[in-house]
Length: 305
Image (cartoon, rainbow, N blue to C red; front, side, top):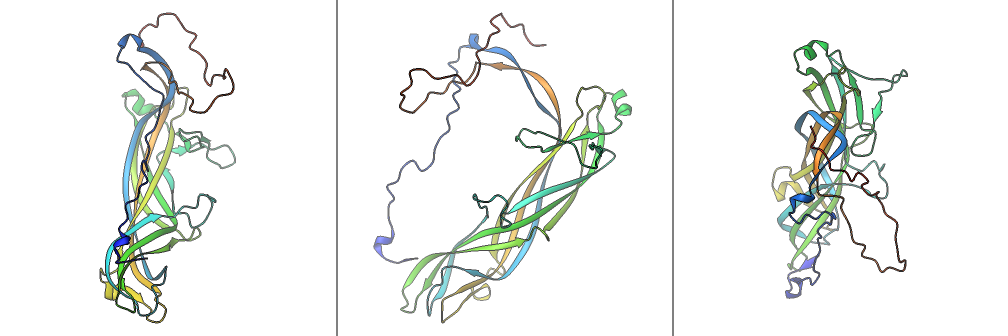
């Protein structure tokens, strides 16, 4: 905590606290160096975006540090919320996660014969996509996609980190500033907070392709917090003997989810060549191996159709 002394206003001499990225891609503007290259990727055929909100009330949440005997909070200058994440344990039940679960109507997720959905690797490098099948013949004859419908349940569990910047007076009536912190539970993994909504997506032909279309979904979650009634007297309680702080809060959970139908495709793209990064370490070796092969197709490339 920092009391009202002149030395409290410090100028940090640390520079360049943030950074810029280096991709290794450079283009000098010479269009003669631009060539067409085929790449094998996933194309988004249809997508839907959803913004959902859940509320959680917290009564008597304990904050640290304690302010000491006779302390009295006179002002709240800021209140913040962020999701809790333990980088040492991705399975920590306190990690705030939003887990989507979807059931389809008018289509089926392809199974492996044992009742498990067939999952394939997505752009995130994990098995995050499911194969989808429905008889698309009727809409194929019209040159259109086939609509499918689904129900989405998002299970939210874990905790959030709450910080409250306050100004308080101690037992000598000296004004001090401090940031109170707490880890507030939202829900347990066994009894999560569930948000539900419905959606429609358009599916391409399952017959006019070597690959079945894939369904993928992903979410991100944020939070906002406020005092339950926006009143210091009604919502913040300071124990006069110990200075322990408790507060009543309303936490809004802000969730963004996107669902996509993707299909593998081959695209022709314009390229200026491979990126080249310069090593920034002192070198003892005289030569180093390549990470990627050279382009061996030296014939003039015809334009992509």
